Image (cartoon, rainbow, N blue to C red; front, top):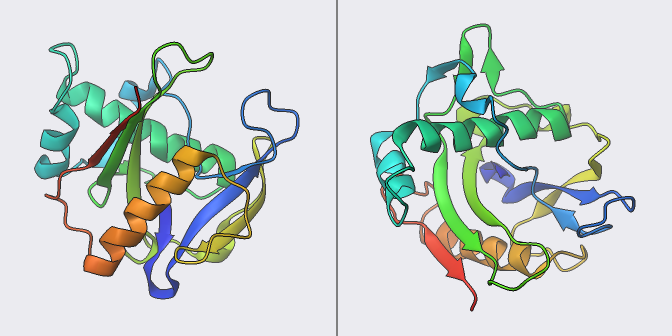
Length: 187
């Protein structure tokens, strides 16, 4: 998720009413990892502390390359859904990503996900907050006050992740890289 730390806002968009899953709800830009995400160029890799947390509570098949591919997927999806680029001519900038949370839906649910939530701050990523543009996947892009999101209908998981961000921002607006992510697994 992209955070405007100076104004305590997070970028969110409404999922199209044409979506089968969570239509008309506000979510953070993101999506699934594509098969070729691990091949995308990186000019500044994830910090070691972030990789260490991404590797915890995973199988042996989950490697540093897998962790990097997840962060690249987040950066790619941000670009596709909002037109905000975290890439220059040499590759993607991942060094300022923080790993905030992981959420897994319970077994038996009709649609399941195992999602990692990254945070990037606009000031560190040199993002102009006015660059965000609607896409086919997310419409009505807006900067939502982290502490007053009530006016926007959201999925329960988005509310939980936003509360985690609120709590961490109240502790420190820096969001240290070495803080373990919260883990949400509902059984």
